Length: 295
Image (cartoon, rainbow, N blue to C red):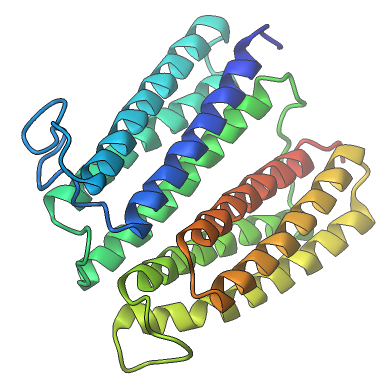
């Protein structure tokens, strides 16, 4: 079932949400998380704060765009209910997006109210950042599926072969890689002057040291899975998505290496995050395409 206009809107919501996520990373990378003080949803106790510092402007801009993204997802779900029948996969995926968007807002509020922002180096912040990354990935995944399903693609089929299981494991590994990347980026922000493999500075620095090795291991698993998939798939779409996922992964590895060599400047951190999100979405579409293939 293809509803005119809905797919375009769904892709727009996905793209805009991705931009908001990058802006959120900019807030973290520039240490602007406390730009609105300890107030949420108000900023310094005001709905529209007076111009104070650059950090306030950055954090308030992020909150405004995040709020707009929230509204877009609510409208997406309302439109899905209106145009798609009960039980349709677009309804289910848009509901998933709405649920994780609500969690995204609550996690963002929690980070501010619990003071897990700016220069905080507590273990609690690491746990919240890990949960934040998982929720963000799931939000992007459901938004991507909403756009994908709304284009009238084939229904999902049950698959019990080894490739189906390998692909599901791949998604789990990418989630784990994303969490390690979020903690590594936090370490780069909080300890920018620490160079090399140092284990005696702080937990965030130690976790940062593991991330490149985790990235290499997960990438090897991804390349192996994609290679096996190419040998079995009968779908041209799945084949093309496998090539796209592999190419994005190669670019991501190169960007990650440059990010390390340049000591993680803000611009390269955002580029690294963008390709990490793109890699996740490509993997989501690849797995979905394989599960839509005829046996």
